[in-house]
Structure formats: C-alpha cells, structure tokens
Length: 404
Image 1 (cartoon, one colour):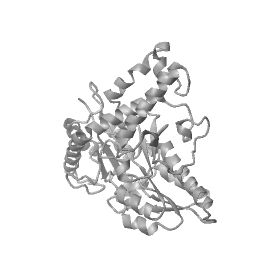
Image 2 (cartoon, rainbow, N blue to C red):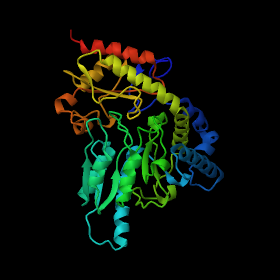
Image 3 (tube, rainbow, N blue to C red):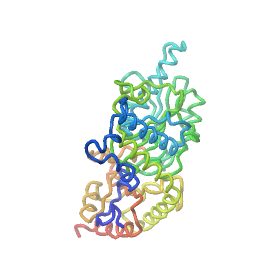
Image 4 (cartoon, rainbow, N blue to C red):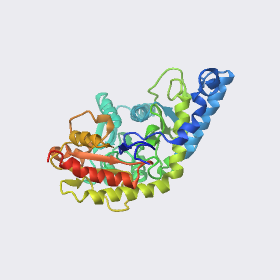
C-alpha cells in the first residue's frame, strides 16, 4: 500500500494538512449517496417535522453521541457541530470572550479592560480571531514557547491577571508536533477565573484526548484531519459555559450555531473519530516508530537539521510529524522537487502555504528568518508505510543534488 491510497504511486506525506478518506466514512455514508427519494430519509433537513426530517434528526443525534463519546465529553449536548475547525476556533475566541465580559459586567464588575491570553504558535484561526478582539478593545497577551515548542505553565501564570477572561492554547502543534500540558494550563486559567479553550485539531486521533480529563471549557476539532470530509468540524462546549453565538439565524444546534446541519458530514466525522480512537494506541506506536526512523535517516544529510529535538519514542511530540530545516534551499523549492519525484510534503500549515513569509511558529521558537525559509514538514498517517519513509529518504538525496 502506498502513502496516499491503494493502487497509487504517489506517496502522500501531508496528513497534518488533510487525511485521505478512511473506509469507515464511506461505509457510514452509503445511505446518503443514493439519488432522489431513495436517499431522502438520510439526506433530509434534520429540522423538518415530517418523517424524512425526523429520521435525519435521529441520524444526526446518533452522530453527536458517537463524537461526544470519542472526545470524552460528559454529554452529547456539549458537542456543537460547525463547518470546520476555523469556525470552531473563531467561535470559541469570540463567543467565550464576549460572554465572559457580559457576565462580569452583569455581576457588577463595572469598567475593565478584558484580557485574553493565547500562545504565539497557535493556528491563524486563533491568532487572527485574537487580533479581532484586540481591535475591539481587548488586551491580548501572546505567550512564546520555549525552543522546543512547549508553553510553560509558569509563563501562563505570570501572564494571568484579574481581567483575564479567556486562555487559548493548542493541544499539539501542527508544524513541530509539540504536545502541551493542557490539564495544567487549564487549571492555571481556572485558578485566575478565566475560561480555557484548546485547539485539539492535530491531537485528536494521534494521542489520547479527553476533554473531560483535560478539564477544558471548550475545544475545537476537524473532520478532514481524521479522514472524513472537509466542511465539518465541532466545538466542544462544557455544559453551562457562557457563550455568545457568532452564527445567528434559525437557532439550530440548540441556538449555539445557526445554519442547516450537514448531516452526512456529521455522520462521516463521527465514523472517522470512532475509528481513529479505536486505532489510536496501535497507530500511535506504529507512527512513532516511523517518525523516529525518519529523523534518524535524515540525520545522514549534513544539510538537514531537525527543527526541534525529538527523543526516540517520545510522547511529548505527536507521533506523525517530522519537521526539519534544510540549509540552502527554500520550502517552496523543496516541495516542488519532492512533488516531481512523487512525494507530497509541505513547508508548514497548509492554510498559509501560499505565503512567502517564514512560519510564525518557527520564528516564535527562535529560528531565524533565513533558516526558517528552508523548513519542511513531513506528516504521516494511516496509510503511510515503512517503504514510504525509506523511499522519501532516498528521494531527499536527489532533491539536495538536483542541479549537480
């Protein structure tokens, strides 16, 4: 089996951008793919009162229960389906912050400058939302991680004050794979009277995830990172967490996110999530071995240096992400050369792949701008094999001597 899918020669090593569809999704969505009236009961509007609508609603709520169980939520109602993780992140930053301010002012807090804390290595869906809050008069603190990509609990504690309404720190970084101490960070935020949100998009399915055990107030997730369809995500909102909806209209999703629900997308997301959780322990060990093998074999090239130091078997970093810095070559050149040789990799987050600016994540880690221009991210997944990894290492030699 190749890195992309059976029968394909192209080796896909960009799972952190999106994952190929998994068979569990196709099986779960079979009923939605029938044309006309045959598929109506599955594909009806879940808000309609007629029989097809009620059946679609039943299917949707089953998907919600399945996803809630996979996330470790206490109840299905804590799962709010969205159009993706970007919407979930936006909704969390804006909805939680505004609701906190409203609640404090209603409690007689009076005039104060609300404060939000985020890490400097968040996805742009969080960072740009934080900038939007800043333009509305919020004060925003951006925590810098250490050189290995970890946000220290002590640095958060030092940033917190009486005006802090929300903290948002990702569970795991999409570029270098560093896994954050979510529970301890959430506890620190709560001790200061702030809510805590985590972007868990990259973590889910790659490491143990339980929003209940983490003690977070909100968390964001994405379907296509697990092998479901694009266009569906979820925001976990712990029961009784104050939240001001950002999507307004018909009051779907218990009034927390208006818009006709994408029932097939929800079913696909739930099926992919259930499969990922069931396979997570075995796949985590397998991918961790591939990650360590790739780092070790790339060390043979003096032009290639690991961006962060990942000890063998380490669970402090995601098992599927390898990030290296290549001396003398820019990311765009590397990506196109590998693509020509049949390997799909990236320079960082796919959402900013068209930008010529160096990664804000690497700059926050202390990598200088020129060096960061040569970053390469290799991310693996369910279909990645040892032969794929070895083939990629061999191709690396060709890429480095392209003009020789």
